[in-house]
Image (cartoon, rainbow, N blue to C red; front, side, top):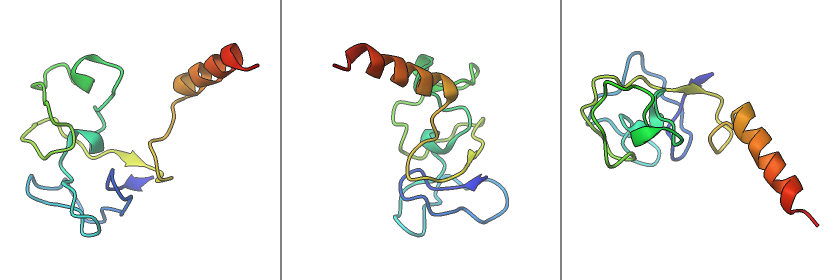
Length: 98
């Protein structure tokens, strides 16, 4: 598992965390953003699992969040599905299939 840009998947190979002004060398998207953070979760309040963090409105823009920690993942062109979300999608498809 490695660190990747949320937009294009280019690997972040430098040690440490990206600074607020750092962007992807491939697509020029900001790197220090909620969408690249281990605490980002679209299913919780303010889309952040870190309860002490200040709410961030623009999840795809760089911010000053002190709890940012770059997410380690296998890049497959999209977010990795958790087992619970996969199970929910399968149940939904079974319910509405002909």
